[in-house]
Image 1: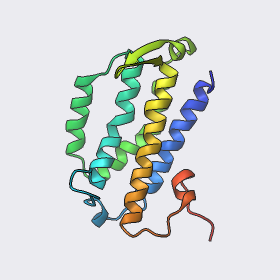
Image 2: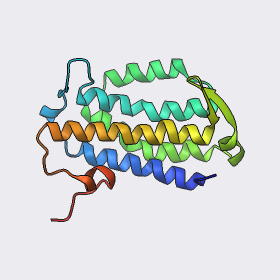
Image 3: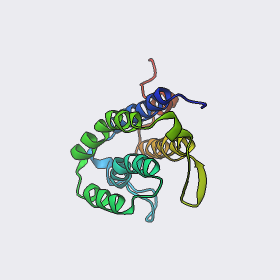
Length: 165
């Protein structure tokens, strides 16, 4: 294993913390920002992030994409306002720790097929969830910059902190 289970949990909890840090930079008028007509708005992106990681963790654990759970979570998310989104995102750090604690080392090394790819559960957790978080937080960061948050920089994106003045 390249990462221990605890290192994977720590990584996902860091991703959750950075995402919440970036959410703290949003104002109400930024929630409807959409770079182009076919891209998600800021609030749509955040709604997606309330279920993307958690449902994928469950799917990877089960070894099959949980389509019904995905659809139900997507429907719930569509009704969430910003406060509900934040509450959901705030719970993810603990949810990831609880879910991943249920994986044994053997489970993490076990190979599954998901979305047409074969890999170990551990590799899929990194590829789909850790990398997914990094990609979508970068998208959120770009949305913030497009909405005029010019003071945000590398430390906000990669460490989830404001740069020292």
